Image (cartoon, rainbow, N blue to C red; front, side, top):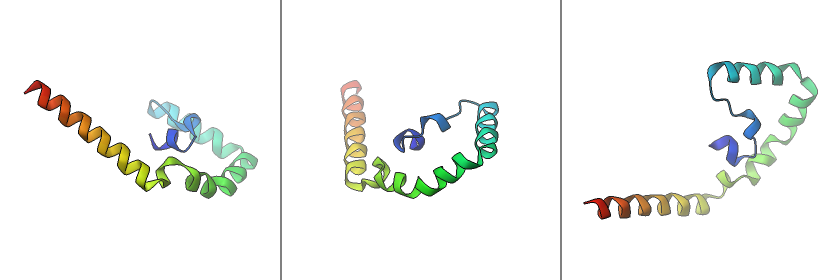
Length: 74
């Protein structure tokens, strides 16, 4: 997921209740929220999501693998 790629797996919720729980906890901790906001742009810039060439290469590899599986089943 995007959050995993950004190094934020603790923000991932598996259901609506988990999402609300995480959002409320984060909103209640103003110091942590300020630290997150201060570093979020740098985290995004350093994340794999900003590696366009690497991302395209991984997507191409995934398409190639899907195509090969499909061809083997045909």
